Length: 107
Image (cartoon, rainbow, N blue to C red):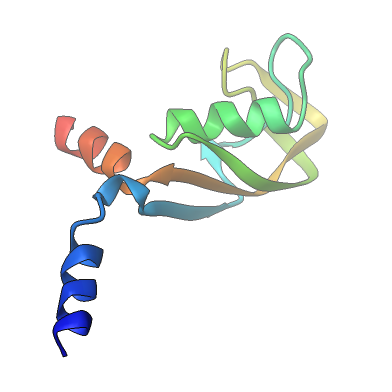
């Protein structure tokens, strides 16, 4: 019994920084338009997904999916693409809970 109580006590001492927070954003938007899957400088995919997650208070993107859209806005400059654009269908963002709680407390 003592061993079990000791183990539970040690587990309770593990810092909260090891916990994580994950959030899925479906069809993410900025200023009424879908998020462009590319940055203004031409970097597409992961760099644009990471920039979106950072803007939302997360560390990085874990996964992302792209799809065609009529309009898409770049996350870094706000430049609008009209017509045949590639936007994010989904972005899954990740951070540690302690980082997210600190940023939410600052708001």
